Length: 158
Image 1: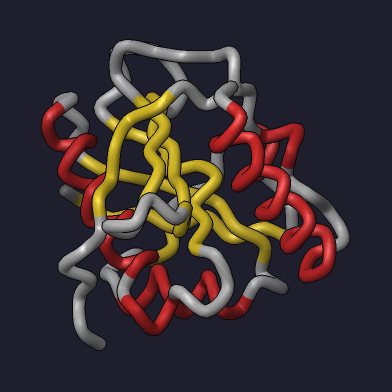
Image 2: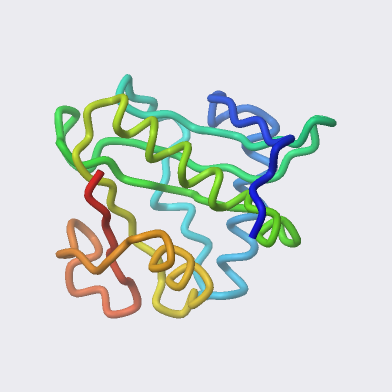
């Protein structure tokens, strides 16, 4: 898979119109795959100095995907949490997801995180395979994911 050379990833306000457009697309896709949109797991108003919301665009400015980073648990946590990762359909083979993931991992390191964790639904087999391909392995579940058989928690040491 070739990396996108015309890809630009920028931090934006998660409440922006463009961010909301992608988050709505992601929620609709997750609802089709999992039967749950995942909306309740991400608060666009909960900005943190150790996180961010990132949009990927091509050179022409077309929106390609998004991802969010926040501390897992306490604000001074050594573990960051990846949230709302999404590459528009048809972009996966072009490296958008991989570029977004690499960007969030770099931001996590910059913010002092030692690891990055995420949760996804077991039914979302494409996501589970994508994260495994990028070095993510099962970790102990946290919060609402404890005893949630429909979810899998994955992590990677940075």
